[in-house]
Image 1 (cartoon, rainbow, N blue to C red):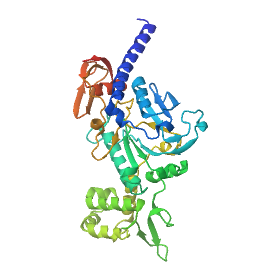
Image 2 (cartoon, helix red, strand yellow):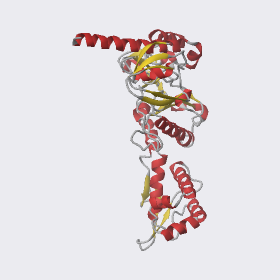
Image 3 (cartoon, rainbow, N blue to C red):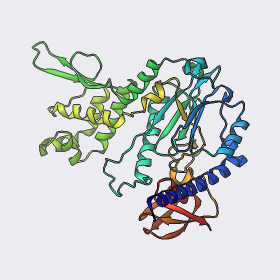
Image 4 (cartoon, rainbow, N blue to C red):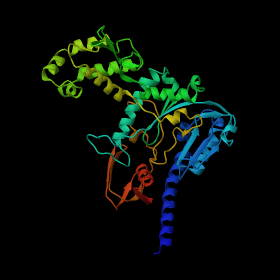
Length: 404
């Protein structure tokens, strides 16, 4: 077989794989139960973009109604579909300045990966990783509770939480009070959550979590820090530190700088008194190394901070994935999440429940999905559920053969 024949065969095979995926997507978008979930407010004033080979092959598209949009999804079955966070007078106009922006919703995108971290009980799965999804879900839950609700002051009714369909979450703020926020103001919210301006120690009294109060001789000082009744980052650091002290063991104290056995013993015996002291803002106790508290604050900031994809928030013309649409890299639903603590992406975001497919695996595969363990051998024909077939085809790990 010459190179032209091989190329033609490869293109034909790729087209067959794409045809399979799009047929499954088209069926998903044709069902009333799925259409009811994909409701876009102010749809006639939104710009849309969609793609098959790329996330956005084209944009500057608009729809007069949700029904027209559903019909487009069913007919074309794009692998990716996004809409503008902005509301425009003329959403399909091009170039951008002709659209006449009226407002922009506030959206936060949490899409971090944890591939470089130790996975403890399991190794990273490059197809789709339970550990990474768990960490992303925990981060999103903490971001909503500690920043969006506590610090930014929104109510739960103002918030729509969407799994991205892949690695993270989109937090939509449905409150008109923020629709006119400037790009810079949105960036400041992201920087605040990421803790970029938070310093563990400050000798001037400006901006530090801990403050050194020098005595008249300028050589000795006391250390003051967050206390009960504080709010924002100080409240978070206080809460984290108290929890750390309550749960700490000898090895934890050593990691924070207390290495002498007698000091560790003293600390363990006086935990209650230490916690009482810091609740009153006194972040030193007896002659415990002051670096201990600074190390605690450093660790607290590192564990509390949540970094978002800032351009998604401050770009006033950004396109973002349509809620409850299918993600074209995984075949999972970018589903709206009611309770992050109970949400399981690889179970709750399953889109396809067809009769199953036969695939040909291109490598050995092991993963858990929809509460089922799958172990597939390399270069084997296997019968698998539709949701797994779509995932593996999209990831280039298998080829579709035919429907069972």
